[in-house]
Figure 1: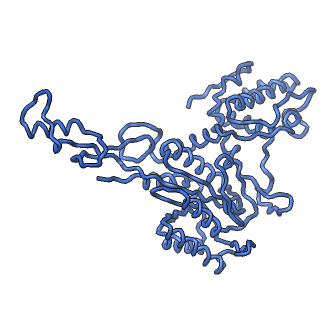
Figure 2: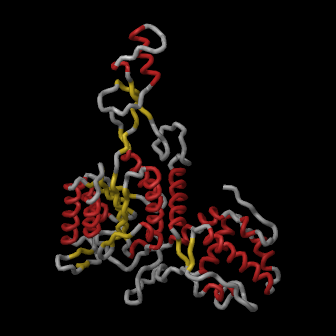
Figure 3: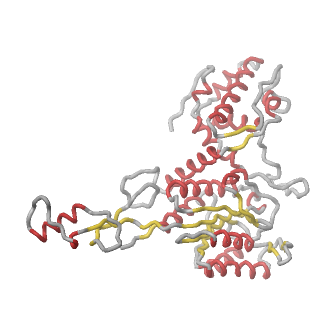
Length: 426
């Protein structure tokens, strides 16, 4: 994507910034997982124990860093804006950032609780008591549906590009990808076939049979040939996301990449497979379905891993869908460590692989198989005991287990989804 770099400040500079490139650079900041615990829940102090900052001040700082990272805002330009640190130079920088926020709001990517206001008086640009802090301390922002859809689209393009398919299109390739209609060979027409007539083959059959070229041509029922195409079956998908606290521990945020993949898969299904459905289930101490519109703001917390409850809810959602295929895509990094008892109480064992928990979880896996539901598990950890449990679960469900990383997670999921979406019929 082409960027524009400016050597000096001008009042129109905010209007000239590539807004979509800026939003793409802000993706990690906008989707950060943070910590979902309230004051009554303990913090574990592993580097992700602060609530994520949704203030305008944090957004402005993120925009500043994104401009620098994208090359649209050079260090020299920043120095030119700051000048000698006088009040006028600081006001120009603050106005530039506020103008970009207003553009994001005007274009429908973000919304604000209250509009940003310019502060008065001499203040530093950054830090407590700064200009940015005074202007934005009471203003929070949220992604709109358009913003969420854009981030899903950008993630999808990036994932398809990493698989060797860089964009939507109609050029013939040996790959499966969105936007491609792959035709098979022609066949003799049979009653009930769609009348997608192969004109060339039909006329050739008539010519071979009659030996004459004349108008009108003599066409017989046996001359008719129809094109075959790939059969795209309808599919109901539940994406199960593990939001236990381990998903952001050990110096790695695993939940934000999982959310990105969910947004990309949602965009793919909505734009290329409109007959399909996708729902998202978060599982932790218990499990709940969340609207797709709230996925971007979903967070992790100090929870255990109640895989059985997540499978039970996913199975109930899928059985309500009348589709050719039903599948569960489960992203997790932890061993089952919680179970919902018949009285509604949550039984927990932080060490994981409790025999009672494992037994009930495998019972839910067997119930999914009995209902014709495929379970594909994408593991973000390689603990030996966990590997053995996932292998056992895959054997029961006749699904697949993928041991992947946050970098390759999206590629594995999209490849698996697209591979099983299309099959040939004669």
